[in-house]
Length: 148
Image (cartoon, rainbow, N blue to C red; front, top):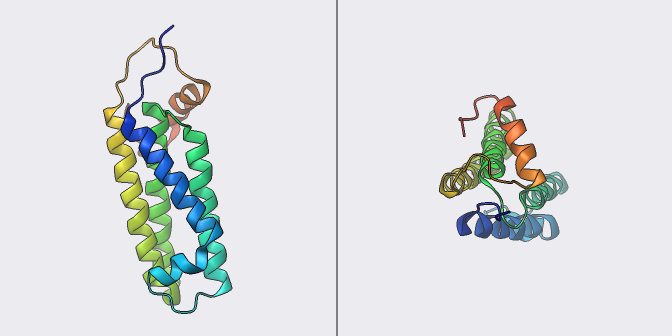
């Protein structure tokens, strides 16, 4: 049995995502100050921690060697995240700038993840990990997700 096909870009991306998620989770105040929030309020810190946990969960699900479907599903999640951030920007004027910045960051993650997914060779009949089989099963159910 051969090992599942992966690509170093996907592996590197998930490491970067885990690092980003950890930074958001453990140091939301400094991250918010880096983007221009002089005095981050408790609600903003809590939202940033939730976003950090989301990134960590996505990195954990993707694993160390994510396959094409796993990465493609992750890109879809990032795009949905961006859309919800745009909705927040429209509905929460005081946090609109932060929500727009979050949408930009989520779109950047989504673009990088989609590019990494396209670099992973897709070979039919190849043995796949459980998480990749799950991702392949879920992918056709995601609204607007492109065909693998």
